[in-house]
Image 1 (cartoon, helix red, strand yellow):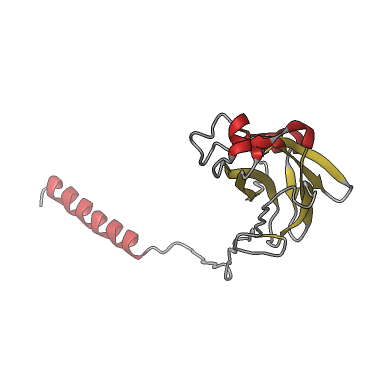
Image 2 (image 1 turned 180 degrees about the vertical axis):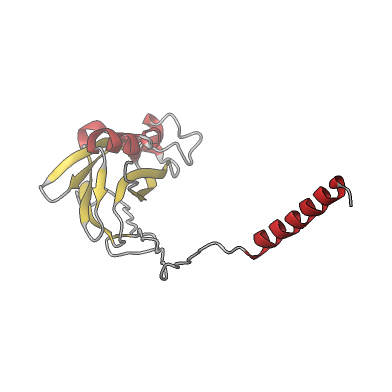
Length: 211
């Protein structure tokens, strides 16, 4: 055997031996597993005057002025029955003034009598309202408007401007009062038989912590 062949034979054995070492080597290892991890979402729920999941209340006024009663008010207790805090806002929806036809005295002064119907009534413009907020330290006026159809958006915007951020912590409540009144010095026969409808909506939105 010449030197070249001997060298190749030695290299070949070395390669086989090296491969055997890599195949049988083991690295130290360990495995740890956490216990059961549970993620549970919080809850956000609101009741208004005790009602939950339904229209909280409706009120219907007819023949205003027959008994001299042209003012009134209603207070709702709004409770956060969930487990996380929420910010409260209000809005006025579906505010419609109806003319409901015209008799002879109304027709003399009401220019819309030729087209009576939704949006043509004058009762809302003659009815002033306020929204009062009580966070436990007394009533604070946060909205002042009439109930003319064009005033609908003012309820939400004035609430934000005057009340600011109204946070109801979990399990706590605030009181909101709506008052209304008509001033006999500001209207005449144009509101005869007129009617108005509206919905007052409360929204409670989860407070997102700042990072």
